[in-house]
Length: 130
Image (tube, rainbow, N blue to C red; front, side, top):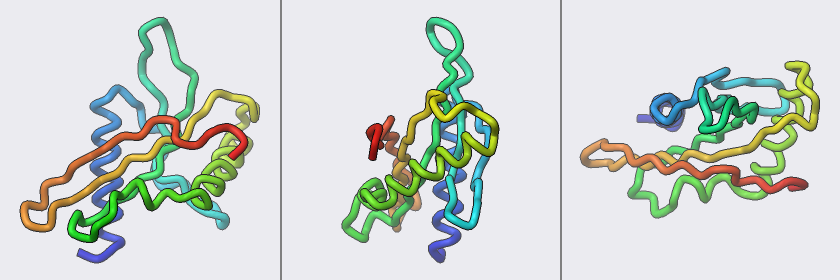
């Protein structure tokens, strides 16, 4: 499996995970020349009414034998770029720039022998002003 196939598999598994957790997928692989956002989603429900927060999700996928955790690949430079991409998406979709949003990371680790995935969800990983 090459890196493109691995990334596609991770994004598919991440989208399935989010759907099971009560998210509605708004877009996948949103691209502009500056970069890409893997998944854009919104929670379908909230305990006390609707949640307007838009969730921008970065998916990192690895084969577990390489010695890293996938979320380690969402470094500070990537986080800054993601924040800029989120603001561009909000602007292009006519949301006010102060609309509630957050950036999440999903790490997908795939065991090379069993090919069994392990998914970890990291909520709101980029602080304001990053």
